[in-house]
Image 1 (cartoon, rainbow, N blue to C red):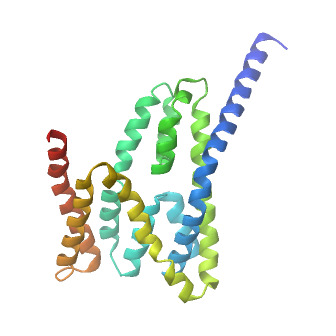
Image 2 (image 1 turned 60 degrees about the vertical axis):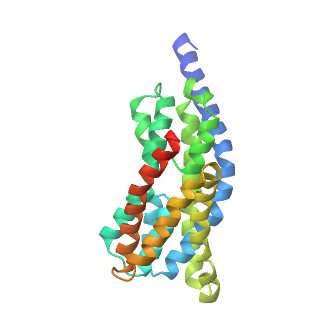
Image 3 (image 1 turned 135 degrees about the vertical axis):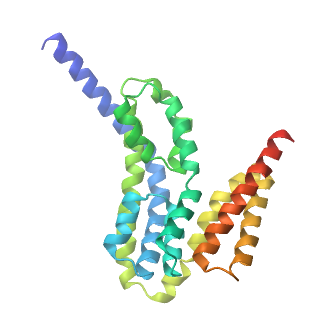
Length: 244
């Protein structure tokens, strides 16, 4: 075996090690995602989405809170534009997370940055923020690929499983799973409120706006308009937090 072959063998071994470590790091995320994905699949199926449609949403959207919200908006008859705008506003934080992660992963080849950033979620970003040493290691991109793909595939598989269950599960049980929508948003909100109470104030403002607008707009546009207005007000509230 010549020197070149030895080097190639070493690189391949490093890639396998990084990939394996990434999969192991993604395993806890998988355990958290799978039951939530099943719940999403059940609710989506009960809302009238086909197995192909709800699976496609998990593949192309891959955002738990947005998928729950989108499913609920479809159920109340919201239009495509309303769902797109609401999803964009809700998921805007992903731009910030992606930029933050890519700032750490500046050494990664360009071909890796785009697909990895698409697989970022709140949970995987939290783990990646702790495990930063791989951004400086040879073939560290394989570590994040393994971790993010483990979480991604678990979400898709859980959605499919939930979609199949949704067709055979009694309505009385599936309707009780609707609480998962509220639990999802509370889980996203509570950590922020613990840091600064004003984040809770913004959520409260959005709730009041949604209640008031529901008298004049259909439910879909009421959600969109109240979210946009509360977000706009939130800019000044958070700015006040910064300079207070």
